[in-house]
Image (cartoon, rainbow, N blue to C red; front, side):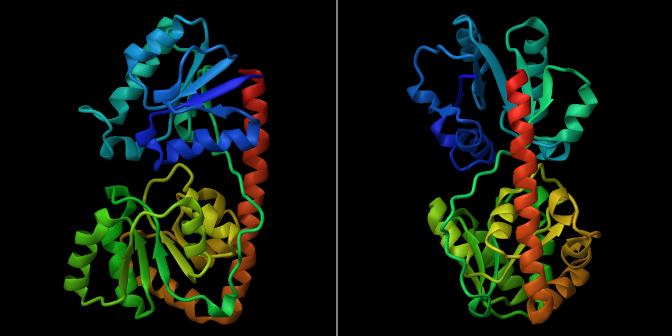
Length: 313
């Protein structure tokens, strides 16, 4: 099947963009930025971030259109992308599907897809691509903690900073994105944390190089559809302390026991988990291997499912 994906260039730092771009490697689609898209002659066009008027114009070109919607239900309430929020956008897509103005809605959340029970509203798991050859730094040389993610409320950042402070780890706590400088300064002042380092936003390869040198990743948000950062860290054999929302990671019982966080409001217990993993060398090496195994397993599972889904569309 001949498929093109498209979204505005300003979406290129988002999870939605990673979905669309990674489909090139998983299913041999072609991604074209919305600003560069001209006449469309394909079997299916998968879009994200495109307004209704433009979707209607595309439909007049006699092409099947699928809209990608990435937010889980909880995030959709609190991460607005329009004046009314994500769920308002989803309602408009559902109405367009009913009227025949689009052909599919692809959802990143399997739970959300089950609510609709509609064969045209389809769960599309995260497409995963890993380029071989990325350096794995020596485990003994790794140092510090990291958080690579957004400042959105569902990321549970106050408890994350509290947990890092309680852990007593003074090695660098690396965070990316200069938009986070004022937030990091606040928590540095509040908790007297002198180990927070804010990097500018990094290119993909720079990010992977930075990840590979860090010892432990933190992702304790209460709502996730997949979480690419945890997956990338896992492929580099970097364990993560995560919420149970990152289902594919905590499916492994040992990862769940030592890395999974059940009470996301208890930064004391989270800090103790961080400290245990960080300072126990035998446990740490085991978790490195199990993390990569979990990432490879979900990559194979997701990519196989994607091929089956798109072949039927």
